[in-house]
Image (cartoon, rainbow, N blue to C red; front, side):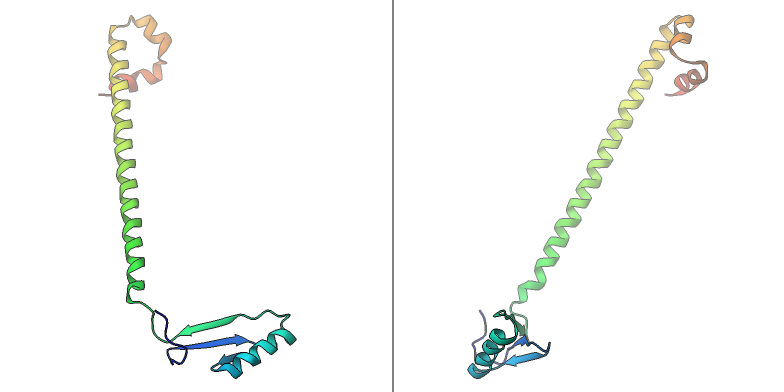
Length: 127
């Protein structure tokens, strides 16, 4: 609910052609603002309403809610990335075990053709 027009809870201002801030406190000031707009500002006039008190107490709660949501989203993203990394590592280990098993069963000549000598120790050394 906005304060009533006669209330002292807010200030209405505009900027005139000389870049001065002018207060509007009654009908006479409003008529003067209209004249300034027509003569000096090509018919354009912007009013600024400045409230002396916050309109609602709840306005301070809104950022807290969005901060919690952002933090939760970041946490969920980190957990997802961690889980994907673990799954990738698990898959790599499984591949290494499969290669190691195949290497043990494979004749030495075929193994040498498939795996270069410098890589062989790494392949066989993995669990």
